[in-house]
Image 1 (tube, rainbow, N blue to C red):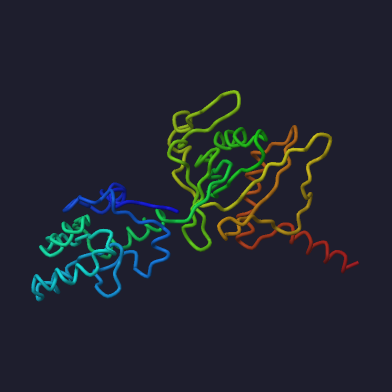
Image 2: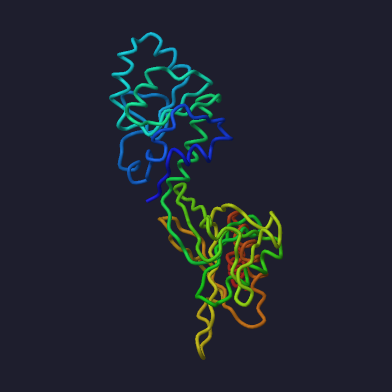
Length: 311
């Protein structure tokens, strides 16, 4: 279950939305969690709605004009009906907060924020933000990188060489997102966004070297805050006395299902003399070509079939 508070919403969007506090009480206690939002018929965010309430109620110029023609007591009675289901009020367009909202908010410990920006702009930004903040997520063991613009998660058994491969890719221009623990958030029907736990950001653990601060060593361009997951590369090492069981010529693309999203997957055997960094980059380039409808394996099969038919 993902969860966020009004305080965090304010801190993360204060600069972008020019937010200020009108009433701060209850900001830490008032929070939204993904379970409550998914099970509720309430809207997540929208203009003030007394019939189908939103968790976050926006009070814009339209609502100000409407309230001016309603007696104060009637305003308070209407707002009281939705107070229990309101996470916070946001007064937009630089409008002054109406006395009725202040009275109801104080009585029910509902935080009130103000912004000079138009209401629609606030709704667009916060809807996107809340979609990420409340997204369902899982954690996976691996290293997530931005390789040639593609989100690649390197997985495999402990000690197979994931971090060493990641370090080689970073030295070739890739960017580190997360090492060891990758948090994957389901932010859209077919999209998984990978992030790093706050404690591990910028760090890569390499056996023999310990923890390396990639941002300090390679600079700002060597790290990423987040990246959509597009491709999984599983490193496979041979067991004692046996070769790695990987298809030499895979005819069908394999995938791994994570949070009901199928992610393309390739398996790379680990062996002495193999340049895994080059192989990963080649896998990424091949993946991009497949997205464009260019399948090298199928092209070869078609060429072979044509050759046989011509004989």
